[in-house]
Amino acid sequence: MNRPAHAGTVTRQAALALQRVTSGPLGPHQSAVVRIGFAAAWLLFLLRELPNRRELYGPGGPWSWDLAQQLIAGNSAFTTLMWSDSAVWFEIVYAVAVVSSALLMLGWRTRAMSVLFMVGVLSLQNRSIFMGDGGDNVIHLMAIYLVLTRCGRVWSLDARREARAARLVASGGTAPVDRAGPVLWVVLGVGLLGTLLDTTGGEWWMTALLWTLWLSQGLWWAANRYAPRSEPRALLEVVANLAHNAALFVIMAEVCLIYATAGWYKIQGSRWQDGTALYYPLHLDYFAPWPALADILASSGLIVMVLTYGTVMVQVAFPFTLFNRRVKNVLLVAMMLEHAGIAVLLGLPFFSLAMIAADAVFLPTSFMVRLGHAATRLRRRFTGGPVLKDADGATVPDQREPEDAGSEAKAPPAPPGVDADRSLVR
Image 1 (cartoon, one colour):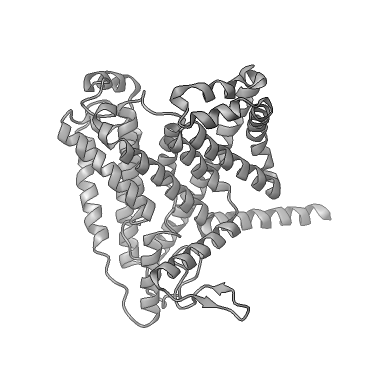
Image 2 (spheres, helix red, strand yellow):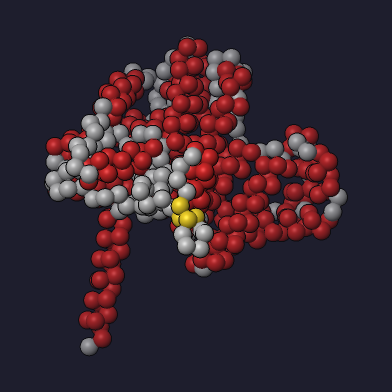
């Protein structure tokens, strides 16, 4: 008698889980923070290395174009810098990488900018694989995953534009026509023609992915434009949600894998057991932007022991703490503080920023919503916007407009048969 009831419960739970992963993108705030963090890390790195760009990745570097071509012919890596050895072409690719990183961080046309961001990261890093550190490897992977996420749902210019269009439609107006999207779509299509001229033996799956993304955006625009309430439009929405949720799960698994492997490898070696793995880097000139501070830490055996064993324990334990929210949050703060310390003590700010951005995928949604509200109130104070207070004198959100596209405030529903979201490249 209990077996059919138990089977029915399992079926209902499976149906609810399937509905949850198909009805909408999970973790919109987490994916937005990952987008902002990695775009900012790569942008700041490119800006810092702007004077040295040709020596690192361009024609003026010791790793010449001919050497890079020989290596890529063997590993089949994707890079647009192998399409030409011209200095002008290199400057164009570098400029596109900078601009796409800035626009992705701001959330303007996030779908298109995420693709350009990925192309820029892969082009530069695969051109000179001997440049960079562990943070570059993380950015390399996350740039690919971000393409599949809907990381512009909150805290982006796209979300603000869509909210304004929805309010305009709800007030009886007409949704504005998206002109920038089709133009950008055509420009990117012309740029994709370069993949057909690539004879360096680049990865074929990357070319196929780029063309698939370009064609899918055209299909998305056509469905929004001519059949916004049809079944094909709903099917595209489900596919987009599934891709986002799967990519978000892969990002979380990647972070857990990074910490688990790092922690278990540390346990196997003697350097992290006797403290020398931390002691020696503090005395290297290359990793000592603050020599006096490094000397103070290295002179205390207790501090070295606590930092050494604490790092190992946190990295090994973190994947197992995902089943306990409170413990997970405590270790999450500890890891972020650890990376902040690495940025200051060892002079690796971009590696630390990349890892903190990866850790942010596990931040609780309630905290991120409160953070978004606080940022909105701060912005309104400095820009002269209205700041409302309740009966107790506490600041409350202004209800006359959504919370800056980042607080999950719901825009008024559009009338039947009208879809406010007509963006081509989102």
